[in-house]
Length: 231
Image 1 (spheres, rainbow, N blue to C red):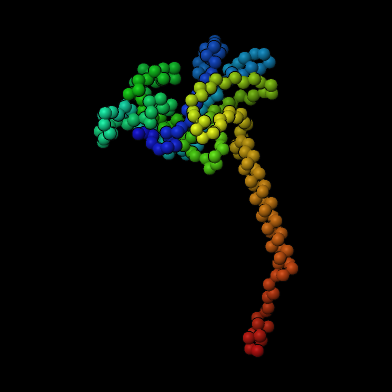
Image 2 (image 1 turned 30 degrees about the vertical axis):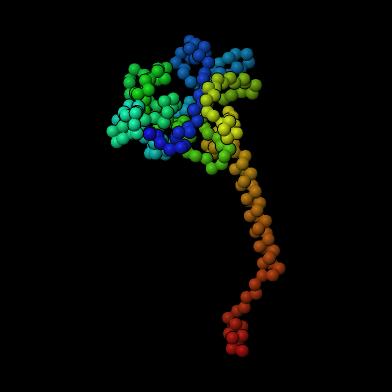
């Protein structure tokens, strides 16, 4: 199996669709991935992208697509995989794949790629972001970047293909729009954690200072120490 592991197999696979009527309009003839925004009664399609959502170190060094991809169906499906079996995707509808057939290499035709011609696209930035696991059960994953500013009172429409299961573990899914800067985005938990830890450190420092001032250890010079020992 390629990729292998529970994290790779449970990759987030909901899909967000743009409005075809807007994306195929003369104003945006080549736009294939955008979000519909209603602003002052006018509907527009603002592009959002996946380029730049993953760490450059992961993208350049850690995740590499095979330079010699093989068909993904198991060569001997009737029995257990052997050393002669082909590389297989975790399941047929796995979202992040490339096609060995050049006729299905464009975004418009990619999903028509035959199952036995698919191989895993482990260099996909959405996949890389998911593979970097979070330390807490509630987490956010950067999914898209919108370069244009959104305005107050903008109405945003998203079409979601809801296929990622969360009912089994009482999970929830949310779409969060946030402004990110060079130092990152909003994370209230981290900010409150820093404040609480700093207050605790300050209180401990004051407590140790008070202890030292009221009942600190008495030190003696060398002469007095020598006389005490001689006595």
